[in-house]
Image (cartoon, rainbow, N blue to C red; front, side):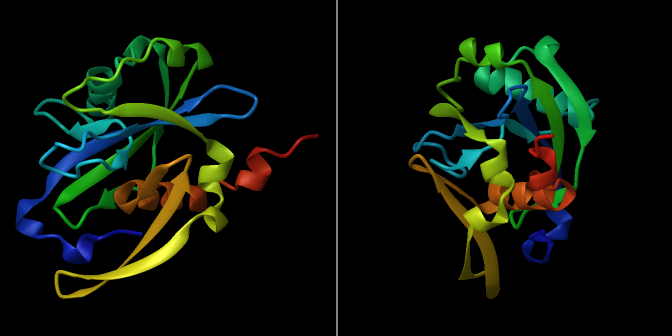
Length: 181
C-alpha cells in the first residue's frame, strides 16, 4: 500500500516513524495525536516521527523524533528493524522503524506541546486485525484515493498511519503472534 502515484517525485523527502510496541502480555503500540493548530496534518493520529536530518539514518531519526515528541528515552528502546517504506501523496518517503519498549516507559512519556496534543497506547492485536478498519475512497489530486480508517476510543486512525499499520499486518499474522500454547 502506498500513495506514490499522488506524489510529486521531484519533491520527495525522507522521513521515519517509530512503531514502539510495549512489551506486555497484550502488547500495545504508542501513537500520538497532533495538535489541531498545526499547519500540516492538524489533529491527526500518527506514529512519533518526522524528516530524516542530514547525517541520520531512519533509525536515528525515528528515535530522535520520539524523544522530541513524547520524551521517549532512546536508551529504553530496543530496535527490531525496519519494515515496508511508505510513499505519501505529499512527497514523503517514510521508513517505519519497529521497536520494543518496556511497559513502564509509558509512565514517563511527556508530549511536547508544540508537536503532540496527546499520546495513547492502542492494542497491537486490534491494530493488526484488518477487519477493524473500514475502507473509504475520496477524489484527490485528479484520481480516486482509497484509504483505511479505524476509531479507537475516540481517536481516528487513518491515512498514512493506517496504511503503515496495514502494511505491517501483511507481514505479521496477528493470530499467530497472539496464539497461546
